Amino acid sequence: MSDALPIGDFSLMTHLSIKTLRYYHQVKLLEPAQIDPDTGYRYYRVEQIPTAQIIQRFRDLGMPIDAVKTMLGAPDLDTRNALITAHLSRLEGELEQTRQAVMSLRNLLEPAQAPTIVEHRTVPATQAVGIQEVVDLSDLLVWYHGALGELSATVAVQGVQPTGPGGGLFASDLFQYERGKATVFVPLSHEMQSVGRVSPLVVPAAELAITVHHGSHTTINATYGALGAYVSRHALAIAGPVREYYLVDARTTSDTTQWRTEIGWPIFQTAKQHS
Image (cartoon, rainbow, N blue to C red; front, side):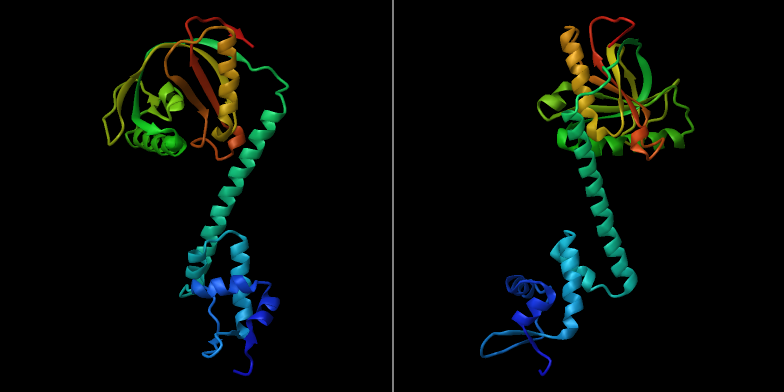
């Protein structure tokens, strides 16, 4: 093979180490064009350089080897582009998670300039429909989005008008022991037909210390901390599930900076407003 490139030369041309090239051969990602039967030396072709460069780019972007193999083996350009687009979408999602984590950490490191505004509110028992399940804390965010989406769609299909913002109830066991009851609900003026997981319920009356969380739920624990500290300082806390009301959320806008969530902590007395 007159245009054969020894593995050392191919490594220099592609900036893939000999160790990496041997590994890619082993997993059948980038196989040599020829292997000397006597020496076992690997040889490549010049035409393989672009493929090696493509592999390197996608590995630099964190694409798993199996996904790179699937992408390279795609039967047509549309299929290949779809696989690449799907991976880029996953990367964008990971970047957004990282951005949210960085923002949350900065908020923790930089003390809030304004005091947390807390309102004491008496909430009457409310007729509603909802979804209730015992869930793991690690699954809570995914469960919440799925359950609230299912609940909202069911209400909309039946043409029932909510009487207020949707909300959630979360048992203390969920946070203390990483598993507990979670409920999402939509208040209604009259009963609605049960469909799937959606069924009628009564949101119990409560006296709550309430504050508003601004932004994505990925940083909501900081607002929980501020509200919990307030309740603790004033010796107000009683047992019971914490409560959330979704004034503005993903159903309203995809702009997470516009989201507004009321957090309610059960207490034993009420007053007008505190800070």
